[in-house]
Length: 398
Image (tube, rainbow, N blue to C red; front, side, top):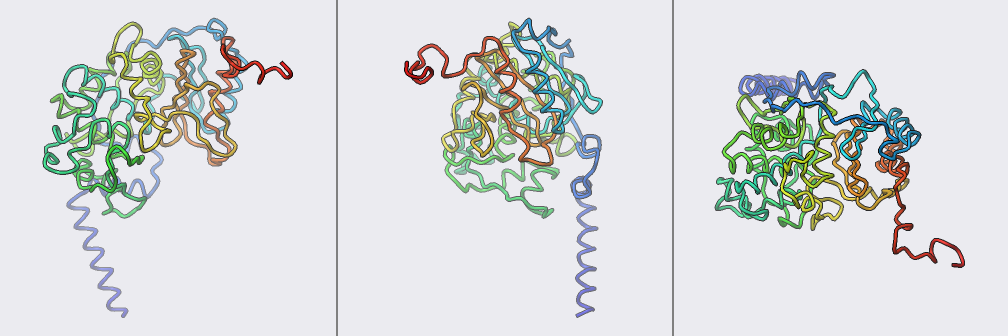
């Protein structure tokens, strides 16, 4: 038995050496993840592709009171954020920056990992591609672009299905298996091949799952529909037009596919520019970047999960100890690690928090920061106090 064990160990060593020789990029990434690299931006996210920006100045900065916001409420929100592993808290209203607070030596221009924020860029870029007639209609089958699936049932998945994370494709379970589908789709040198290998496990349009396949395949559709590299199209259609600084997308290999589901390196403050697009229905300081009505369409609930639209969460989590949002129209762009972008169209307000989730997840309420700020607005009207409310429920014995 001892001899057998030695031969097994020897065989595994040979396989490891052969694997490293054939796929060194993957094994380097895999090792960095296992070792818990302290500098994933510089070591793991390689190679990268530039997303050229307009590099314009940020929005004008004004005092909170000029935008009818309470300074004490803003400070209370900052105190909550600062005690919970935050790097930045930025509040904008009516295209003005009204409050900023930074931690850990960062600032507006600090380049940070956007986590899964880039998904929202894929959704917005889809709206531009539709306006440019590169994509025919929102429910166009993706088999028209992904020719590998033209005669495959998966080709009937629509662009809308991808936007709403409702492709019905099998979701790889959590695993550290280096040959597993999930690890290969994240760290491999051919992420598209990894996703194209996934079979259907549900009904497209009805089966919702939070997975990287849908935004990644959407980016592939955009590339093939426009005939441009994804990074190039995101730059010309969105990033440059809103004046954001240069940013970088992580590639699966040199000259390969950009990760559209995560890991964009961008100035943390530039996400408030994206917020303006979302709050103002695709308009950025007078420039119609995305056609009117597209953002509203992004807020249509998915049939398989009414809490989500197109890469946005609709409403607060219904979990113990968490309060509802102070206004019914708040929606959230959610980073996988803790980044948050709350949009409040009724108040023309956006709130950006960059950071990690606190170690004690029970000490975090997704509604706490926005509610403190919203309730500190002088023109805020609680839902029950708005015109048309039933006064008998507000005033006893009325």
